[in-house]
Length: 378
Image (cartoon, rainbow, N blue to C red; front, side, top):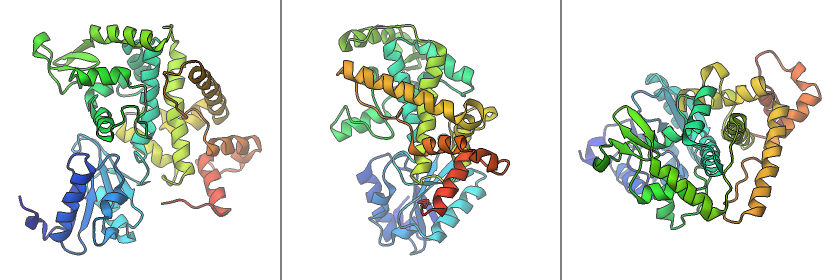
């Protein structure tokens, strides 16, 4: 296949590895070998698409089309609006998603877009809880009993433990934290240094079809005893006293920061409405449909005042731990979103009773803010 073969295409989706220079190289070549009105899109899951589009003579014909793996099975498509994307480009890509029978959501070009940005604090807390004393089995069980299709430990072995490890190595900063990946990294670094990326890395010495957090043998898996031993070493090195952690605390600490990040995304204008975020999580991340998605769950199952109160509790506790233990990496995902606080205040003032049936309070607050001069980036 040569680049000249793309000359008659109307829409192209680039899906080379997540290396910025490589993507720019491909886009430059496509720019020289396609019609002026051909849409050139990228399947990147986290790189800044504006930077990729900048190499095109006409960046208005570029946007993100983030398919979820495996693309022929997963129903979700995140269409990512770039700064210079034309209305025609956006409309065409949304119609393209519909043509493919995808659940297509328009999102903003922020770090991690919607899905990966929200899953980062969830994964970070899973790793933190593991260091504090929760077991691998307990973390997965709590998530699955909540209704998730898969627990965080199993998910890590499925997608590959090396994904963000490689990005941190490429950046030359193994403690780097972004909106899409956050520490603690101690166990992840050890696994990757041993070339144990999960299901994709077999270990013939023990007859394993894959090795990461778990030892995989076909469809069967068990927690690697070496992982359990390594966690003890990590706790000793970092001065963390192991404790028994109740399931309720685990559920709160994994899901509340995920929800809080959803409020931040809405606050920043990177999603149009709360139900868009719910669609992303039900069809892309295995969130239980019966709970309606993370934003619906927060308002209708937990209650926004309780979400705010519990976030404040965990934020204070996190600050205390950081003050006492300098080996811990700083995180801010328990700090309540300004939009969440505004929604709770609006509820106290009786706004919820004035909102039409079926309209989430967060959307009503957003619409009110837009009328006062705020504007969505979408």
